[in-house]
Image 1: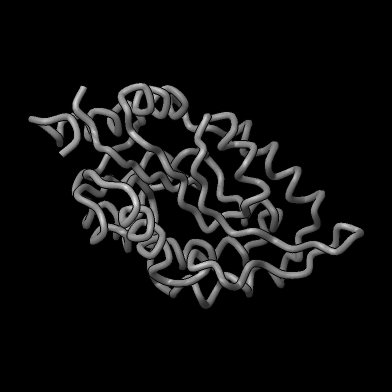
Image 2 (image 1 turned 90 degrees about the horizontal axis):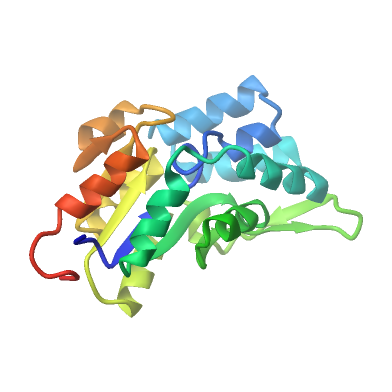
Length: 217
């Protein structure tokens, strides 16, 4: 199987069927509206990231519970696709504006070592204090920054798989952008992706078919 040397995956609504921030917000319509606006490219991520967390103020226990929800919400076929890519020599990275403490158990389940997410800071009693404001992932174009940094250190062709506008921003940094509509279809991604798919098996096919010739170009 001919594949990409690097494959970057978004997490929420791509590898899992939920949006973590909406789960933390317990379905609050105001939170959901802000998330959808950001994912559809209607407002920059910068404008909603801190605002949503301040509205929710998740505790450490809330984030632990979210980690468990992630483990129970994995998209069908995702573990198998990641395992197949890694067996063939691809280096898989998770790139998400989601909460690091909730993402890490999912990454462990998927056996992915490289995780780029946003760490929260809690008080001794578990109360929310703040998020890592240095992380580029909390700002527009942040995923492009992460991909460029990784590619500066690892040679070979790269692909990005994601469902939202913040993922699409990374299109210019990779050879192939795969839009994933298996959980939520977003028109901006559907129209602008190099390839648009709705299942994880189609993700694997897209990554395999796009590279013919040498294994890692």
